[in-house]
Length: 203
Image (tube, rainbow, N blue to C red; front, top):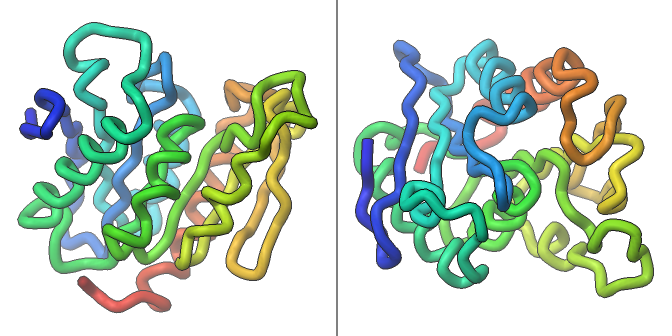
């Protein structure tokens, strides 16, 4: 379904599930789409834990562009889509936000505003590739007030975020593409998400 945002229509791909216990909304990476192997693996893991899954395309991708929009536009478009989904398709149950790479950053930046019960990050880009001394984006992760799962390739050139009081980090084989071991991604998402409905209130 297409959903209007301040920067053009976004697109939500709803994966049907009867009587969901919670909902997971996932965004794509900067130059990729919603068919990325790690996104689909996380979706399968979520569904096996009773989550309704929605995969969201940002307006720039719907318009056929590969270059991402500025962060403020990404956040505003994402927020508009999530708020619309919460009115119906993802309403009445605990909501977890997430995504891969750029989509993970968007989910982190909007988690508090959208009152997310948790955040699931795939391949969070901690710093530009090959530049470990560049300014870190750890602040975006640290600002998330709810439990967070980061699934990261053990050879990711964008770095590996540290675990924290509310942040679990799971390393899997592979690099930033997270294509080498999708089974481990599915299992990590399933096991972590299974605990979310019991810990969160419905919003």
